[in-house]
Image (cartoon, rainbow over all chains, first blue to last red; front, top):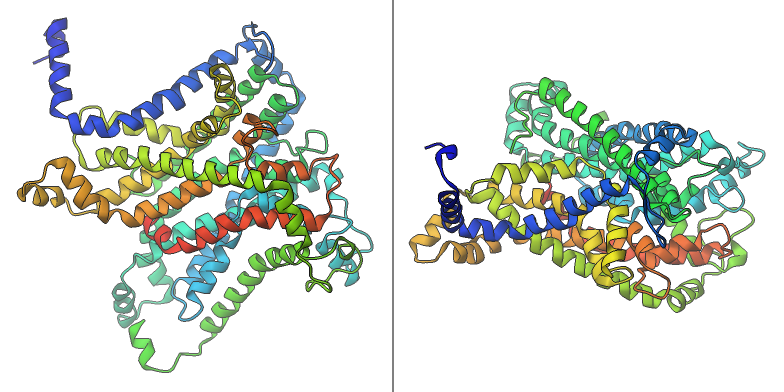
Length: 310
Length: 276
């Protein structure tokens, strides 16, 4: 029976029937659906509308057409920021190396197993803003211990005032981001490593498989999915970071360390320009979307057996 | 592993190397935290001069000052965190159950929409929600905070629960229904108890998300309103602030320790819930 042939009342009764038949299921997804509509799509569409308006937070909004987009695309800061965002997001690579490396070293350690897991997770269990504050102090040129020790040991004659140098400040927030968020990769990797039955490894050893063979044939296939999930999550989250770099540099000097999220924040907070601010959000969403879809296509092609479908 | 406990521990180059790497890791992650904590229990005069880890004149004065200034905000942090945790569980558990174990038209489409959301940075949503809340009168209210923080966290929670429910034996509910329960009762009495570890994991995560959230609280509350403590920490480092480092570090650890302790307490559950 094709849907086209049904008239409207029949279609309604059919819908009713579907609803009755799957009443429990629809009841269960209702909160999710409400959430999707009211906390996602409505704000999102409202935001799209917002991007065509000049919308000061405590003032009258006014339709301005494509002015916000034109302004952003002609604004030097926007390009500085896109570059900073991409460089900042490169921290995904050291995060991956650290997370997977440490997980492989630790997962079948005989002793200190819990202690090392604890130590590895430590940076991640504090709020990111907390870690940002901590490193802001540790790296403080005047009273922080890192430059203090470097000078005491005679490695440096005087502290480096990294907060006033754009590239150094960007390097600093990227380092702190790496330090803070690599444990997520560790957590996902070690969780899936623990899923390998120890008998598999034992049997492989009995048959004389070398460490490298064991890794390629048993361990890697097991952690592949977890790695892909870790990479995608980290890329998305690294691209959209605000609070930690904001706490460390406030986006400065100038706009040098203002990743797109911080530009969005500064436009909203300092200038109260909501329309302009969300326009930056749209560009950030597009950037993130393009990169992630690219990654998914790459993974789908390379790794057979890994699927993102329902 | 069991075979090893019978013989003496093998001392090989690889094992020595691994243990050394574990120690280096501990220094890499724990020393910065330790130094920060050591500074939080010093008088302010001890911050300058040659660096040293162990405080010469330990004092808890910085913590007393912190509690004097942000006790109210810490309570708002707690309210926010508990509320977010409950909301996340309330939305994600039934939703994930339906996605994982119930058949209904539109299931795939709805789930694709959730996955799609995961691919977008949540920061974009802050501005529209902020302006909407302002128009709806949710600005500067704790409800507004809950509803503002939750959206970004639902997809991950749904994903964890869906994964967990899918791993349960496929005929679980049928078996319960043979004994005369309805499908709903089977969910409440059989499936939910089995999902306890995932509930603990996601409950903790929800608490952390609520406690750690900074942007919404900062943009959505005023200093007289329900402002969580983390915003105070942000303001303590602003350009015109002259707070001494021991005070700031004490504030850092006061706000940072509750989620850290909870995270550690739920580590096992988290590792289970996150194994894909």
